[in-house]
Each structure stands twice: as C-alpha cells, then as structure tokens.
Amino acid sequence: MSKEQIYDYMDRFPRCAACGNFVSPWFQPHHWVTKGAGGSDEDENLDRLCKKHHGEAHYIGIKEMAVKYGLGKPREILKNRGTWTDGDEQRYQSASRFSKADNKEGAR
Image 1 (cartoon, helix red, strand yellow):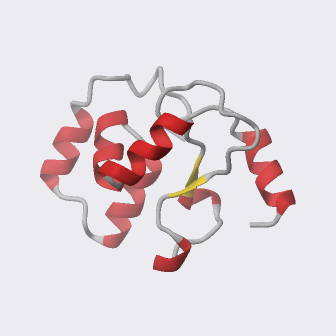
Image 2 (cartoon, helix red, strand yellow; image 1 turned 90 degrees about the horizontal axis):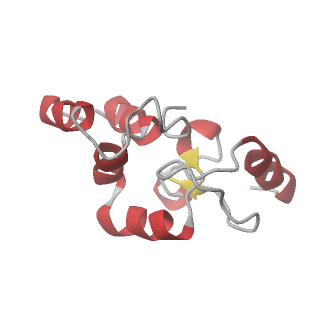
C-alpha cells in the first residue's frame, strides 16, 4: 500500500473493528488474507485493529476473529473461499461479546 492509500484508509476507518476504540494513527490496516497468500490492498481485505486485537488476529486466526467479534469482512472472505461452514455461521450468529448493531466498524 502506498502512504496515500494508508492515510486514506485510516481517515475513513479510525476505529478498531473488534472493540470500536480509536486506533493510533501510525497503526496500519490489517490484511485478513496476507499479501503473501494472495491478499490484496482492497477494502474488502482490510480492517483497522488496535494493537491488542491485531495481535489476537494473528494468534487465533481469521475464522475465530470473525466469530468472536462478529466481524463481517473475514466472514465474507471465508464464505467466498468455501471454508465457512453452517456451524461457523451458527457460532457467528450467537456471538455475544458485541452486538452487530453496537459494533458498527465490524459490520462494514
């Protein structure tokens, strides 16, 4: 990503997708599918995550982040790849940490 693309993304999405807290301006967007695995710099593959949730995303992975925090982008990526199951959808729908209405950044 160019600096211009990063700054544009940060201006449009200043909050963590998982908790809604503001993210430090120097913290770059998180790629759900890494560039090395064929991921892009398109909005569909990016989310702003605070330091805590960025580390957690790398530790527990894309599917567990989607389920735990009700994040729409990783869910759609996994559905498009054919790796999202009915069981995953049930867990996603019953995730209770944040309601999807309250977690506006995750519902993008």
